Image 1: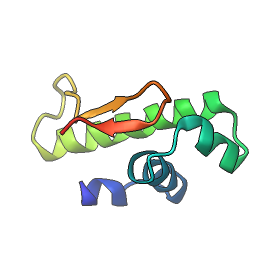
Image 2: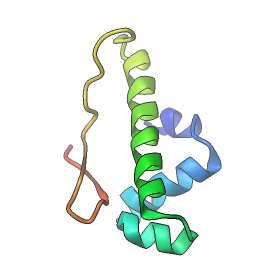
Image 3: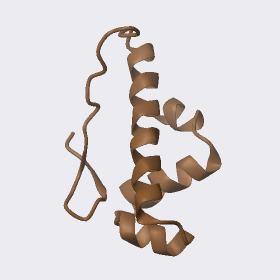
Length: 83
């Protein structure tokens, strides 16, 4: 997963860090960055798709249906690892 995070831009890594390590909600991150909640939600989904694709390629599943890598959104919009 460390290598997957390196492929993200600085703003994408900041989003992942805030939502998944600091456990901030989407609304909290949106307020902190002065970004609309809908935009943060869209970016979160885009980053998760990017990470899933990276993991699929690394595990030899390229071209197959992507499998969830263990992240769910809770009721506040923050991510949680179901690992």
